[in-house]
Image (cartoon, rainbow, N blue to C red; front, side, top):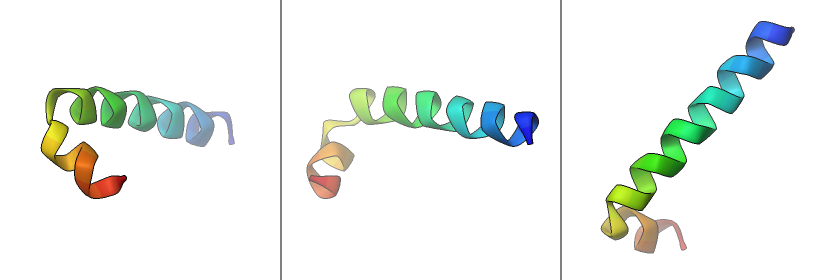
Length: 30
């Protein structure tokens, strides 16, 4: 359970960094 929470939080942090580096994908999501 804790591992899943850690994995989800880690994935979110990486996903946010990816969006910051790619403004094109950020526009598509918005």
